Each structure stands twice: as structure tokens, then as C-alpha cells.
Picture 1 (cartoon, rainbow, N blue to C red):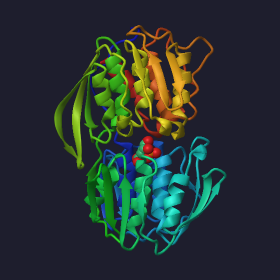
Picture 2 (picture 1 turned 45 degrees about the vertical axis):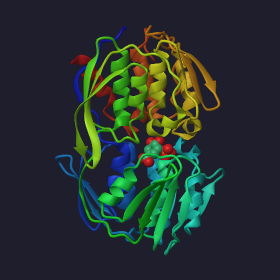
Picture 3 (picture 1 turned 180 degrees about the vertical axis):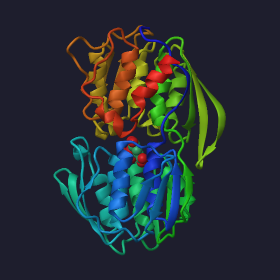
Picture 4 (picture 1 turned 90 degrees about the vertical axis):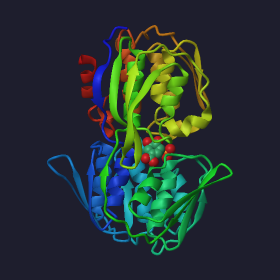
Length: 434
Ligand code: S3P
């Protein structure tokens, strides 16, 4: 391999999903919530700005602790001016849920990527609860919404496996009289459920016939919390794959969140032959956490079980990179949801990997990748650049592909990386220097 191994010990920033929710729930609790390890990426800062615009006071102290003084459930104020969500689908969909049961209205705007993403999936249940919407064609941003007070509790079966849709309905349920029910045919990340309970909401989860039935009593009184955000497994993923691919690597990634609804990539990489050891397993902020020791290992292609997709939904771009270097063929199916992420991640990664010299076939719902068997990719030719479509995970995945290539990989822009992992390049340098 042309590039040096990854060694030493690193720590990735806080979990993005948990960071968004810490700010939102802290802003709805009366009193001071204190958060350590908050991800200070652009997406989370967009949530912070929106919660401030609706009355919460949110400050970063000199030691990096975030202090939030909330307004109480039902206490959100009318924001002056549109809420700019930047690139963040999670901010948009979860905040639409919060606003749906408050007697306020709000405009939402976002960047070119976010403005293409479907909001109909949250507009539908939130309309059933009484909120009203004026969206752009195709149910996209910019949109205007008006909340409903009091909102109507609903029972909603998720038509797509989406933690954002589940969370939007539950957050709307917070200020709704009675019990709001969400039925999940396929389990998705459960941070909202864990954290709503942690803040004192009355929430139960029952499993029946393979479905999860989540019930939450509304008009909740949330209690302020002291929270520690664990490291983001979706950020650790880039380093797990890099250390696996690059010969001689032996890297410890400390404090990685290993919630089972998020840990699918580790399982799939192990099935492919990766050497990932969990050390010092413990709980941080109500979530299972471990230090991961990752050593280089040759990978073999597999058929990835589509049932595991929700627990690694953000990790497919970097899994595709791992597959491109594996021995044999990797087949992925059932990944239609990837087409409505920050970019169409199936076609964006097919194009990106092909440009870097990998052998890839795009199907309707996945990729078929014929790996090199460990031989480096060629890398991008002079004058060609991977198109990242304002998608942070395409940029970071292809940076890792670049490490495993002869000529390196050029991307059109690294700016989107700041949405979720502003310290990515610096941390990669640290790991390669140690
Ligand atoms: C998230 C849910 C997932 C994921 C996103 C974060 C969340 O989106 O892709 O990065 O924090 O709830 P979907 O709900 O669209 O699957």
C-alpha cells in the first residue's frame, strides 16, 4: 500500500444523532441541562441556532461543556425569520415534529442537497396530528408549517424504516394530550426513546410479532439532565475501514457508541474477515460504549443481509470502499433509502468508485462490487475529481479510498465534511503519524 499504517489511539467526536436530541430535549426541559462531548459540526449547530430562535438559551462554556436553559414542553416561541437547516435532514425532520404540536409557525430552508430531500414522510403523520404545511413541489424545502394546539394523538405505523420519522412523531407527541403511538415494523436507531425516557417522559416499548410498539404519554414534563455524548460510530466507521485496509495498521478508537441499532457495520466487516476487538466495554450516557482496537486484515466479499441495513444505514458508502478492496464480490440489496440521503449514495458511490478504478455495478437497490483482493485501487486520473454532491460521507469515504490507492483520490470539495466531522482530516493525519 502506498500510504502508511494507522496506529496509536484516537477519539472521534460526539454522536450526531444524540447531539441533536440533547439540544432539542434540553431546550424543552425547565432548568439547566449540561452536555459534554457534544458534536460541534454544522448540522448540530443548525439545531442549536433553531432552538435559540425558539426561545432556549444555549451556550458553550470555555471547557467545551454546553449549557442549555429550556423553555418547557409547550413553551417554544414563534421564531422570527426562517430556520436555516443547512445540510441537516435530522434537524429539519425532528424540528418539524417539535413545532407540529406548538401554536407557532415556522419556515424551513436548506442547502441544495437538503432542498431535494423528501419531507412528505414527516408531513403525512404530522398533518394527521393537526399541523398544516405549504411545501415546495415534491414535498421539499423551502416549506412553511403551522403547528396545532392542541394536537391530536395518533397511532402511526412507519411506512419507511426511518428513525427521523419515528422521532418527529414522538417529539410532536411530547406536547400532545393523551398517548401517541408509533409502530416500527423494522427497528431503527432508538436514541429518541432512550433519551425521552432519560429526560423523564413516560414511554414504553413493547415487541409484538416482530414489530416495536412505542407509546408515549404527552404533555410531559421534562427534567433537565447532565449528559455525556458517546463517540459517533458513524464517524469511527471511516477509521475502522481505513485501519482494516491499510497494511500494518493497529489503531485504537476510544469511546465509540455501540448501540445495537447502530453497530451493523462492525458485524458486516467481521463477516468479511476484519479484526475488530472491543475493549473496556462500558456505558456512557445510557448507551453501550467500547474502545475499538482495529488491526489490518484481508477482507473477503459477502452478500450483505438487507435486514442489517437500518443498523448501518449511514455506513454503506464506506462499506462500499472496503468491498472494493476485498477478495471476491460483495452484493448489497434493499438499500433504496440510500437514494434519498444527503445525495443518492448508490449512484454517487458507483460513480466515485468507478472513477477511482474499482469494478462496480449499480442495481436499483444496491451495488455489486468486485474487489481487488487487496491490490490498491488506481486512484483518480489527473484532472478528474469525484463528485461529492454536498455529501460529507461521500467525501470521507473517498478520502479513505484514496489511502488505499496508488495515485490518491481527488474530490471536488471537502467542505461538506464539516457538517458531521470537522476534525476528520486532522485526526486522519494524527493516526498516520503516530
Ligand atoms: C438519523 C436517522 C437516519 C440517519 C441520519 C440520522 C437520526 O435517517 O441516516 O443520519 O438521527 O434519526 P433516516 O431516518 O432518514 O433513516
